[in-house]
Image (cartoon, rainbow over all chains, first blue to last red; front, top):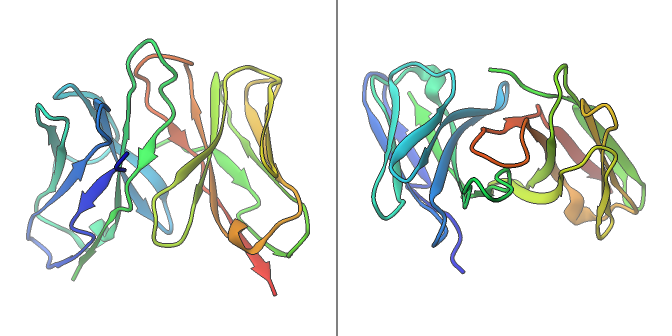
Length: 116
Length: 113
């Protein structure tokens, strides 16, 4: 069973640019969550999508947005990049139907963004 | 955003030693999970706990769901080099449903040769 796939794995942008990251979940998983990981702040929750709807949202500014497609693939976008956006962005998928334990996430390897 | 407090932040041990780490919260969680992150990879689920007082093992790893529901513990026995990495706890207020996870700050484990 293929795991969670994130693309690109590495990218370098400059301040003010925008970036789009992609995540393909495990087949059958309908939930996709996004996390930002930095050395100082640990794993910070960005948002979760389930069946194309945003179901949960973290405390990030509106520059961070996401969406989910009908095949459960998800993208996140960061506009007007700032230096502090440099981080590892992790995507996690899970079944997360209301009838199952929903904390069991399967993470991708992440997209490492560097903003210069 | 809210995070769980993990301790210690880092550990330097010798191969073969036992390891203990814990995670505490000011509020109650009804699900506790432990993840491990190897360098350059995403976190991987190690153990999931769903009941206060529960003690669950996965090989050399043992985790406990604290009775107060405000803490959890992870022990690793007879550490080996592949145990190196960052260990994260995570909590969820419900056992089911769509509530998001809250992650701990991580414990970085290093094995000294």
